[in-house]
Image (tube, rainbow, N blue to C red):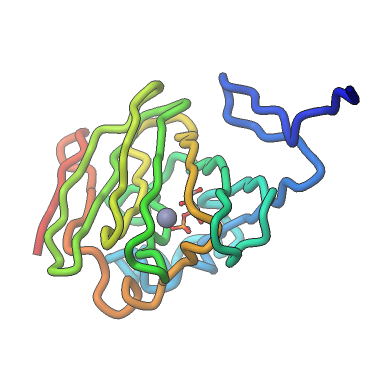
Amino acid sequence: MNIQQPAAKVNWATGNLEGKKVSKTVRKLKHLEGVFADEEAYSSMDPETVVYEVEVLEQEQPGKEGGLLFGTSYLYPGKVGDEYFMTKGHFHEKRDRAEYYWGIRGSGLLLLMDEQGVTTAEQVFPGSLHYVPGHIAHRLVNTGSEVLAVGACWPSDAGHDYGSIADRGFTARVKESGGKAATETG
Ligand code: M6P
Ligand code: ZN
């Protein structure tokens, strides 16, 4: 029998993925127009500021039915005005597709919003495990002072629907208030 190398290596302390099929996406402030509430603070900041990076093991072609994708998101600490750095967030294009998230490093919140616009939040910390059912939009928020690294595994045909988020936004925001993270709805 021919013993082969695995598809990739994961550093479980940092989340870093290493492998031939690992892709990397960098999301800067300039890619996040309209995401943060304080537009004045947003336009006063350097558009090249990196907000988060995503590594994805594309063992299957994105879009292909039946496979799984695996990734790590690295969300840097920072704020736009008093609102913490966050990911764009998305529904799945194929709405019924679910996903797992798990905390690796740092601390933050996972915002979960249903199609009626009801948002809940879960604490994210090293070892936290989050099940995101289908039909639920998901966004990470870094409320800490170090990088928030979060692992994810999702169906390769799930796709990303950012448009619905861009149109209506999430119905909750996470801001610093009196030195602490507070959620704001409405
Ligand atoms: C996780 C997964 C990816 C997603 C990434 C960044 O790794 O959910 O599918 O792309 O986070 O989040 P977003 O797409 O919302 O920017
Ligand atoms: Zn997803």
